[in-house]
Length: 447
Image 1 (cartoon, rainbow, N blue to C red):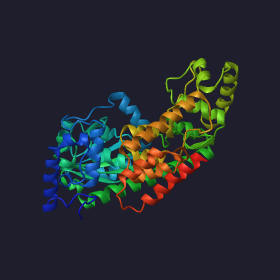
Image 2 (image 1 turned 90 degrees about the vertical axis):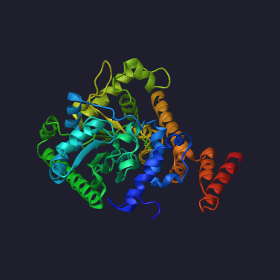
Image 3 (image 1 turned 60 degrees about the vertical axis):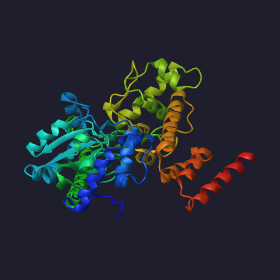
Image 4 (image 1 turned 180 degrees about the vertical axis):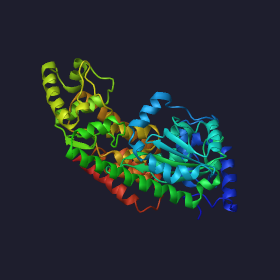
């Protein structure tokens, strides 16, 4: 296979050749600034593309340590409230316990590549501290370049990275296998599970083991949620007790993209909001520190906003939130949300920041509250749309560009289609449809 998805069998001649080619590739990393040729030193395509993203994101291959994103009480509280905390017993039983004497480490990270738990062989743990492969460190592609955890999140698929395929040179003695962890209900990425160690960490059976463990953990999270839902139905107070215990089974979310009325989900309960309440939460979720009544009025009403009208809307919104989750009722002076609320627009921006354009496009269902004329919403809508389009035009694949072209906002985007034609081979069967689309645009624009 000329360009395999997975690295060759550890210890084989092909594996040795791959390492030599990767090391040679590191001597040419400066060429990445100008775009790397397709045939550079025989790298696997997914590795070559990851190196390109890493260089674009300005990850530094010569910095030995990953940056520490969280530590101490902040890390402990974040882990305690993360949905993955609930399934850690499954991870420990299936992966961590067998790894203690195997020369392997098991890491579980969040959806942006920050490691939350790192456990396993004590000797390997001490060695890994030298490159900051520790809880709280940021192992996204934007921070450390190509690695199994970061690249698995960037591509939203299982990944194995062997030795010198890592972008950061201090990681060359290590190999790793990582599998994304998806929410069993929504399908959103919640995090990643990784095995790191010697070359056995990229054996075929290692990938199967991690994928099976992730599947078991996702099923366990689903069971935990069903159990909680049944308990709450019987005795509603149990939901507050479960939340107080620190095990958050759900990620509170706000779906705004491609919708005129937002869907708000808190602690596993979902409600469809009115158009005005959708606008208020869209704005407040984008300002976690809160807004004064005057600032919120300015962002909410196109003309002169009335504070009296705003207060009336907030009273109605508080009633909705009270029924959904009392702890989520918005505060005043300033107006702010007391619980973390993850809007899908924020997920798109987070993915774009770390170079995960494909995942960003999957999340993006269209413009944010497309009919809203609230100034704050319009500004946020234009920002998300602009950044997504620019990212795809500068670094998107043909398939990603064609998928984006199907969105209503791209119906008359000539530059987008010209970019597709530049990327397509001269004899590609896809060219005819793109040319026909350009002709359609010209016809409709001149009528």
